[in-house]
Length: 395
Image (cartoon, rainbow, N blue to C red; front, top):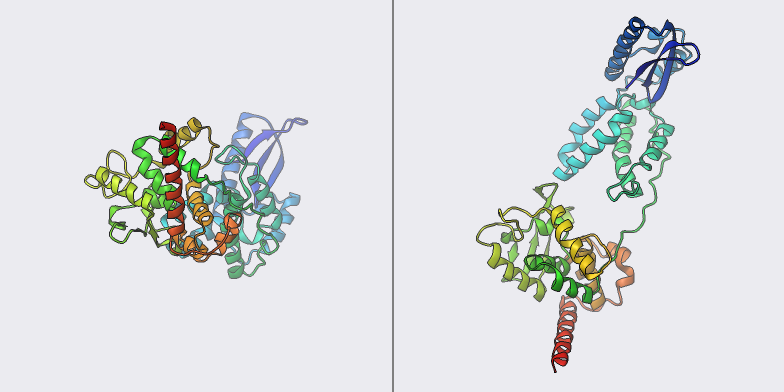
């Protein structure tokens, strides 16, 4: 948003606005009076309107300005290229149909919150590498969800659609994409901080009883948050001992799973089966969802995390961890028990075991089994040991 202000030294008015990503200050010989301010504010309104629709002519508006020659040289580079805000409309129509609903929401948020406010009024062919690097540096100063600054991963996710837009525009309008020499920021490996089996058992003993089935299923199935929150009874097969993962509850809506490879059949362990059988008695008559609220709708994950998950960890004196660590816990328990990594990868919905080795390499002692029996053995051994301790204490 531009402004009209007087110079401190002379008291003469000047216009301050942004054009093509640059701050422009044009001086006048007008005194700081109400009438003169109104006159320049009307000019500023017209300038900003013309900029927004791509018809602003710097040279005709400020013929004696040194910037007029500079922007005239820019005009020679346009080749009919549109403003980024205009090109985005075309790009959106051509690509949005390919994205999931959650992806559309994320992309719309990125465009409206970050990209369009910064680059929307700039001609695509005039956006420079310097403009992009300055924008990326500004993102690094923004606060993230946890109160820290935005992570490199989040910054890369914001930059990716800008790259896609400018690369496509460059191909269509015959200019070199400014992204050609810009690399993605390095990203740390995923935060894998799983629970031990003993910690899992303690958590399940302490957690509120009406959420025990829910967290037992999370800890021993490896389901993602959206997958378990959107799990319907029609996708639970007790006869075959399988959970059919075909959909997920994300951003308040049912949607497809994260990736095509995420569709899978998850094998129930005895603990998961028993928990789901117990849960069926509670919700099968009033909801299509396995885990639901009192109205039979999907649970509010944010609310559950704040009211159930974190308070339980705090009461046990356990390190504060995101609920997603239940998925990492399932993976590491399977691997520690000696399950075959290929079987574990299928349980998690990975297309291959490559990601598994990259993420959980330090948790893989061997690769000898392939049928889910190793984790059964580990669970039963732990339960038996606890029972023996209880009997010994009683004696």
